[in-house]
Length: 313
Image (tube, rainbow, N blue to C red):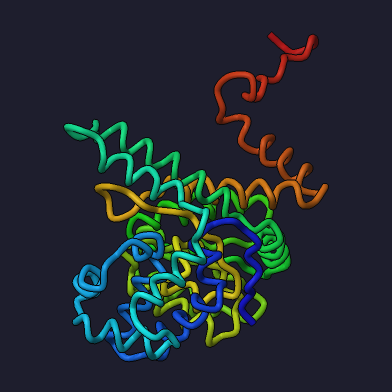
């Protein structure tokens, strides 16, 4: 059963947990194509929608204003204005750091420096992710990881590198870790997942633009009753409905399809939580340091053995 424990102040998650957000999630799953498009847009851009006119929302969703009005009535509102007011009420007094930054950048005269703006987005994404972190959910995920026979980690595209990093961090502390895709792509990933069972965990990582193969392979793992843990950007992500547990990392960016900065920070947060969850992990970390010390430079490097006094010359 998918966990719904997300005690946080993140507007995106709080909105998804509201009665309206849950209605939108149901429409996103079961509605018509046009209604799915509107529901997903509302879940992903609720702060923007609070200030949008009906024409602007219709254009953004590639539907007619009549479709927007019908959508609002179908989910229990008298008209679009009433639905927009409900969105604004849920978000009242809260504004995502990324939205604040976007508004600030848009108001700058003469435009900003792209490199600086990119770094500002990175900071805002990490702040938003930290504010939305659900510690109980993180603890449940750690529990699943340490008890799994095998932890499979999967990501495609740019998420391949995130998956590789997470797998590297998990290896010393989990019985068996498999990076599903690596540089091999879908065929290699499918081969690795062929023997996944209910005693295993699949950690799947995907951010906009979502890879279709990630969704298909996660669905396959779900049919085998494996525990699915998702690292993604939003409750509107296609992974959110598939996973038993979800970690959200904000990924907004002014130029790139998505930013990986907060995802990397979340991977480190998950790793640290796992490392300190068990006293035995101290010994595991010590063994790891000993094993790699011969390959290190500096204070952590292994000291060469001293020759014995009676060694033959």
